[in-house]
Length: 354
Image (cartoon, rainbow, N blue to C red; front, side):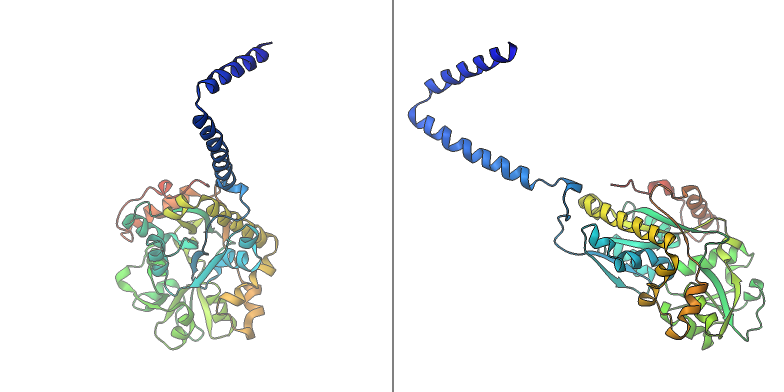
């Protein structure tokens, strides 16, 4: 009954309104109404509805960069297994030789995300460029999952980490390995003034060691595995970051530029989902996953089987699983030992999944 009354009232009002209209007004009304309906329909059809879109509305590839190391395995897997494409995005990845360039590219919006940035460069970058990026996936090392080591030539007389006093130690260029090594030395009770740090291109680390440019090399896999597999080097210290700094040791995080995150939440979701799938694949198929390193890292074909068999992987943590307390402990450790210039609240660095 109420509905019938409403219909009757609406109908009577419409008749009264139309009777008051002139012929020209009446014609104009029936021209405008269809046009307005068409405009509204077009807006509805083209309105961005986030995840209801199969292909995110971005007219260029999403840009990323990487260092040719084991830590970047989730990126390599996501690319080679087609996870990015499956989730509707195109990713363009370029190799860089210095992690400083990676950090600069993120804060200047030259790349949109980086699957791996080490906390030893994340912290100073966050202090210098507040709110330039957010962190998501994280990795850490423990007694079984680690990639760091210090190697020496096979005939070296160095026996323990204490023997590094007065020696030159090589690292691949940039803040990452430099700060990692400083943190290790401090944890081992060695003064930073007692060791000379020599930086080198990541693809030339073994050559530098064998050429005598430094007496020891502080590095990560697969470099250490390649050096020992070829019989030219041996381990001096295995898993030094866990032994001398902290356990578990927070190593790296996935970084997404704040501007990209804000402007392209759909694409950001697709990136994180693709990396989630890559991490799951690595955990379920470690042997197959490791083989993707052959395309992206300098593993010689003559020792590839031995290198991959002995290769250890980091402990991968998805968004929401990050060990934020350990990350804060590392930030405090680096500040207390004057490796990073200011205190940092790491909670502010982690982003909410869009």
